[in-house]
Image 1 (cartoon, rainbow, N blue to C red):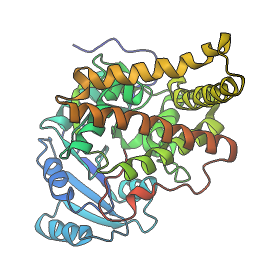
Image 2 (image 1 turned 30 degrees about the horizontal axis):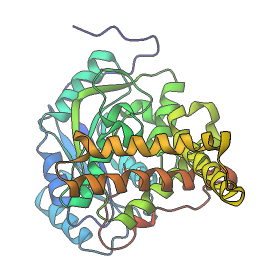
Image 3 (image 1 turned 180 degrees about the horizontal axis):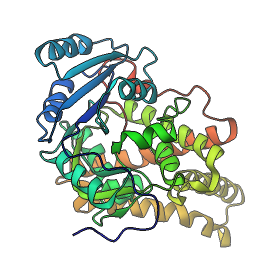
Length: 360
């Protein structure tokens, strides 16, 4: 029984057996690529499938693994992405693809069994242009598991639908996304001038063209986050910078939750300045009220870390308490810097050496 859907344009619905093209940008993913490819090609999909890998300039064994996989399976197609940027790689992969439905996959993710078939059913049922589900972050080390808990918590990333939503319906954006090729061609594929947040910007154009972007919580993708504190900080600073750039470009098209990290920085600056003034005058008074926003934030972090979402033991909870403000402050710093000066050539350097997992 079809769901009642909001007004707007219906996206075309190709025949069930018309085929699916999976597209995956890849850079320095020797630890994750085999499992990502296996989970993709094991999807139960009616009709033909292909997996187009856009290979960036990896410095590990990723390219050799990709060639080995392609030699063993004719469904795998390789294209070069010398620029390394995710939107460039996605566009190259989409242009090299053959089928009318595009499924974005990242090399650090693993699709749940039945993901694609369920997404195709949802696309058909609600006549959406793009449908996505839940990013289910996971980790292998204590630190990576703490980052995963932060991703999965409302405290960590602000409660976007794909970070734990449970109600199906229209969405601002979609994690990864199962998309109709004809709509992508109409709105112009990914904007290659945007290095982070390219999925949000694409979905903004899809929605402005009148089509539906849809969230279905029954869809799930395992995501493996950054593996060290320095990589996490660099990742979030770059992500915050590009969100600042998107605010410069699209203004009120951005959700209010994106302004929470810079608001936190402002509260910290006010509290620190107040503390210095109070120390000089050796008095408190009503100025002490200016410390309340930071105190409230600290309490929120403590509740998030000490509660069930913070992990099982004290070590887990300590890691969670350290990860959450690291994400918020680094994101906020990047946002403020780019809001003033623009993102320019900001690059997520956590992806450019040694082990990495690209950001969604």
